[in-house]
Image 1: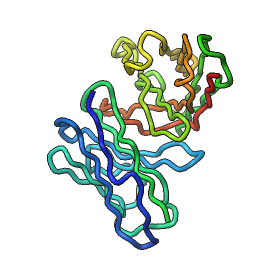
Image 2: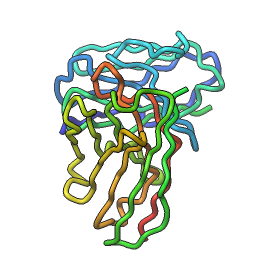
Image 3: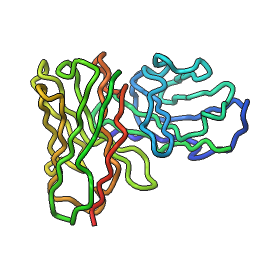
Length: 106
Length: 121
């Protein structure tokens, strides 16, 4: 199985900050990577797919990039509603696997 | 509006069985693959399995941790996808989410239900 390693596991930030979250795949996954936002008690929400394509309705302050097997989710100007846990997911091969999550806290 | 509503969760003893249902609305159910993902208390997300649409012969894929114990099926007339869980283990305790696989055919999930809690104890 492809292992997805996210870093950091948590971070503290303030409203207005720029935040970067990294996900490293244990092998090549091309651009078959999605990012999700998860808030307590709520269903996850897809933000980005194809490593860098913004899902419809997602604010443009979210962006994704890739470099080899390293993928980055960036939030350019953190808003209060962005405090959540973020997960990456590879869909290059089965089993589908998620990263361990990054909790973005105030 | 796309909606996915899970039901059937609850408390069950190890070794017993439980069937979860996910009722969908707001889209052409038969055209989509559907999946289950779970989240154990205090843990991250774990893919459980999915079932493809009839166009792809309703074939299924499972995570190694549930293969041979869990089974996914669908009823396109009722717009319901099922997760049959047999031989439950304490480590199956989790919130189980039903989700829709994106229409592009690439296996990421564009809509999720609110989840149903399964406790095995």
